[in-house]
Length: 477
Image 1: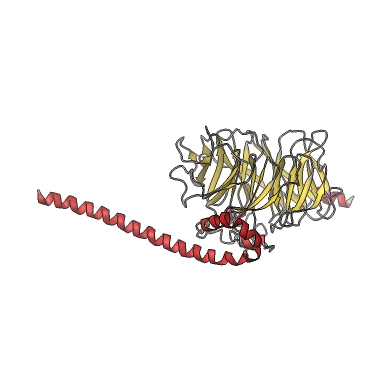
Image 2: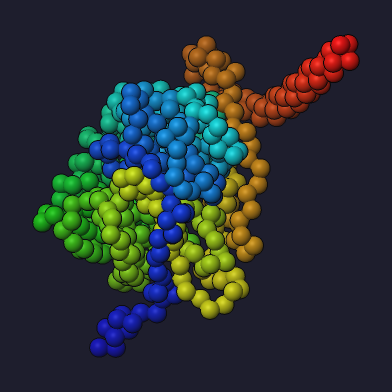
């Protein structure tokens, strides 16, 4: 009896988390949210910008708005519009708040550098276009700890991992999925990925060894799409459907995938449940596409492992959802999560807060969290190194540093095309070449800065000359 009692009133600081939609003037209004039938979140946010996939005639586009630019968004507001087919997924780079990647029905992945203060004109030229998929690209996700490593998955059932800095496809996982891939998620240090697939299997893959480490067939019996994500302890959380079309949430231990650690049945709605996970607090939020609620659960390491906390209910169904990284939250207000909910015509921020009486920094709510610095360079990761996330304290709030200009080393690109054959034969020399490119990158940056300042100087002198000539002409009269 006592253990049951204890379970009923389980102590948790997240029991009283409450959600609140912001006031109307803090929403982003008059946005035509994409109508594409694809189960991605359609929205990506970071401490600087909110990006939203929108309806675009004759191609694919998404909006990028500085967070403070709420209110009505003008129809002529500039977009990122380089894709020739609808955009299906977008993801902000975790190590540079001005870099975003997009995947599209046009079979390409594009990487964009957004200007510091947002777009002043529409952007159609990506920093780099990555071509390698033969069908539409519906999944994009950056490596959590290695700089410039990007994963994409397409309806050609293949996963490609790119070195974005050289524009090369480094790893291609072709024969592991017999059907459409529903989602892909990195583990905390990016050494493994887990995937869910239309064949109802969950797979854990070591992408660099190109091997399947663990697999569970029929993780959920239902035919509708599943999702699988890694938790910080290495377990896997999945959402899917039972044979009776009930929505389920299950937890799996990587070492033994035979039986789930636990399964929670929820309801019989048919929207795909998108899980958003906070590794710092071990709270998972489930946002169903087409639902008008967000359910949240706390995951603990003792049975029954998954504890329902609460449901945030709204009137309007959600078309998509953005999830703010921890460093973008307001720690003074005890905000532990912020969602950007897409309606048909607007984007509405929803704030999740833990009520506290004190104004002091609540360090139990904000353990050190992943910061914007990468632990590894792309080359190191592809060579087999792993790096845990570099953590930062949020004690005084997050202060964004200066972002490095993102550059694609085109020189390597040309070399690699010419030298592909020679490179393959002498791959032993490969690592050595990565260091000078960083030096030359820095030198290049220096030269570009100087050119810019000289251009500025010239243009200001030109203006001065024009002024003086005007004065001369007046005097001459």
